[in-house]
Length: 135
Image (tube, rainbow, N blue to C red; front, side):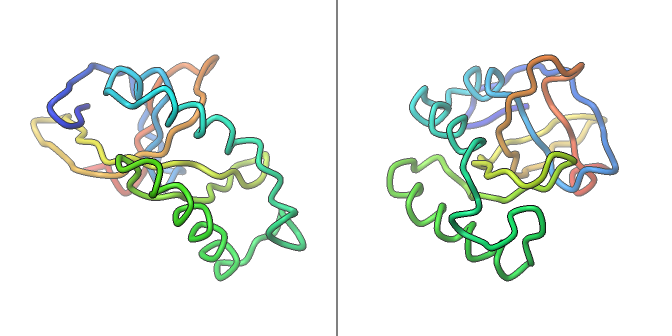
């Protein structure tokens, strides 16, 4: 993968059950993402969404968009490299993720896409390629 002229090889899992791609914090660091960006991204993982919605386990699409906008408006001022902020649903509920633009190169093609940042320590691969980024 690459970002702003910096390239790094990653071990990736292609997961058709995931909508979007995700990279580990260590990969983002190798791509030149600042320590402050990574620290903030890690802190967002434990945000209590009960402050923003009545039922953090069942967030409607309209609530999701409002919450994402709140975080994006606050964070894009501090981090110009921020592409977006997304609420990502997993088996453990929703989490807030910071998103950056990257290029994925595989099968002779380059795909420009967004990837959310997450701690993938302990998982087999440092990157998850989601359905929207598969050929």
